[in-house]
Length: 251
Image (cartoon, rainbow, N blue to C red; front, side, top):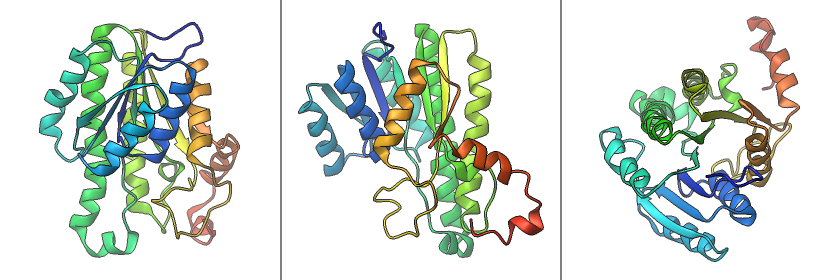
């Protein structure tokens, strides 16, 4: 259960090597989170991430999880919930892909969609059912401002995040009143290894800033969190720009 300050005592990170996921875990462990499950493909990076959180005093377990194997999600994630209540699930996995390659190779584009959308849909539904059965918990889904409006530069990635965002919003409505809180997080450009070497967009942020926003959102039980917050206003304006003009914008 969450403590008096709203901090989850147990956390499941889907995408156990995600820089945003780990920044969030570190922040919550520093508050009062004691049990962390890091779910991802077995790798030295996953083991290193677990060791780093153990060094902060958390009880950390790694879980072999593959977003591209939805037929395994019920069994794998069911075992996590069988160990006891999970107060918070963070859906933090995803791939950026390469727009030019993905346009030229449809199977590469499908892999982006399967990871970012169908993999998250499958895992999200499995976790939502378990959270509902225990009667409490938060499901936090990392979306992106890229899903707000398709851009020529990354419409394949953006479309996958648009689908994920819509799914998470609908799931939140479906779970309203059950004790389960769904929060959609929409960061802008985040400085991570995944975006290294890319031209930095305005209002760029960091994994630590996203983690701070997630914690604040949990405390107020927000349904949507923008990082940074000014992106809410920016995207509200961009949504209404006529397409002929939008095509010419350097976004």
